[in-house]
Length: 631
Image 1 (cartoon, rainbow, N blue to C red):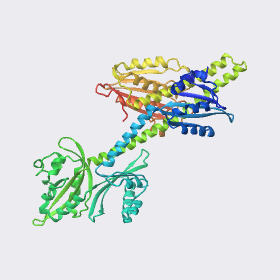
Image 2: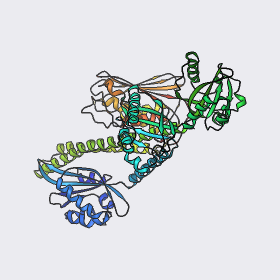
Image 3: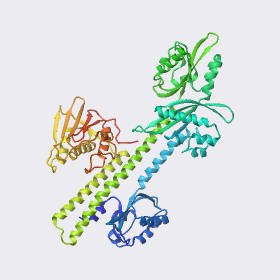
Image 4: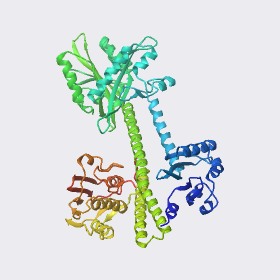
């Protein structure tokens, strides 16, 4: 088979030079990409150095383009995914591969990809990231993110107003900051101790920090640190956020000093205030109570505090009860979730303070509810952004790794087979048997490359929300049998999958394309990983509300340590050496089963076999979205 035929059909631009920089081959995609108005065959023999100088004006930075080409040629080292910007606004990715046989340099291959659309998506993603960062920068609460060594990764404008200092502090810690500001080093030591406490306890911590403003006033900041851990239980980062609670603190002190003016003081506060007696009945609420909870004062006064829809309010009552019995008050502040009168779920920072009226010596408790929903959601959104960036980086890294490995081997096989046939042809020793052998190798490797590209393109469509979901009621048993007949009835080793049906056949709503991919992947894996063993079994069990599809093989099995990553992209079991695969098939299967709102289970033992089970409900998806979106 002529290798040029294959290279003419690949979806990227290819140019092959010899060691004298004479053009040996160029495919049609290259001419199309660079708008070359002549046929590829007419370019063979061109001086590639002169051609590069002629093409340089096409690039935005033409001189840098020529210097970079010289640098690559001098090093003769592979180059992957190098981005180039063109004068007309397009963006290309460039690969370079030197051809070295027996330590002899024979030439090089240049490969170009049109990256314009993907680059625009990347720019859009970066703009979106900047948008969310802008939100975090301007949220009316102090927000800071620390790495595991307590160095700043991010600080918003509320925490540090000065833009230069805010940029300067990234990568530094509180010791650097207090030294820069000329403040007491004990501030940094206290913050470091609190940070270590949060990390050691693996739980959030809240504390009240007292500072002196430039005007000489005392400022109280209610701060919280929350650690976030990866799946492997390793600390990733710590989020700290705080509120200026000086007004609240002053209000609490005024309550203790001037209890008769409690109503006047609390009415001017922006936080909700409730006063309860020793029987936990509400005797007072301020005007902010109604705006926070949605209940009028008349609806709550005289009733137990338990009627407020705050989750775990019993823990607050226990704290107050402990204060009553022990006479000891430590002034803790905690966060609670609550649901207002209209069903909206919000978050409150709650603290309380006991006080007594001198005339009666009766103790009351003022409870302060501060709505911190925005701060809570901001931290949650920040975590989502970080997780999304992490997932995109993992996908990108996995994509580069899988392409560099899975494409290099088949290309080497194709090249060696073509060269062997060329050598045999020159010596008149090329017989039909040799042609068939090497042709089959090339076709097989091209098929593997095609399968890899199809899976990568499918994942790309899924990630961008371009895969439509079109379920309708169908006969699942017939669908399964057609797949087995068309693709697995005449396997080379003669094995055939036995189908066992239990229960009464029932129509199931599913998307044909997705179900075809799910079943083909699971059945194909069952055969592929059990070569030389008895044939796998497929069982359909129609039950009252759902049908289960179970595929059992008796092959190499999956090590227990690999099961948790079975459905992740580019993840393969550690015992599959010598068996082709990309680690993408089951990743797509998980996408498609999730979209059907189905469940998937896997049980396996090494050298005994694997069982994959799917469970589909008999239900309508008429209200489901019609496309996949991985936001």
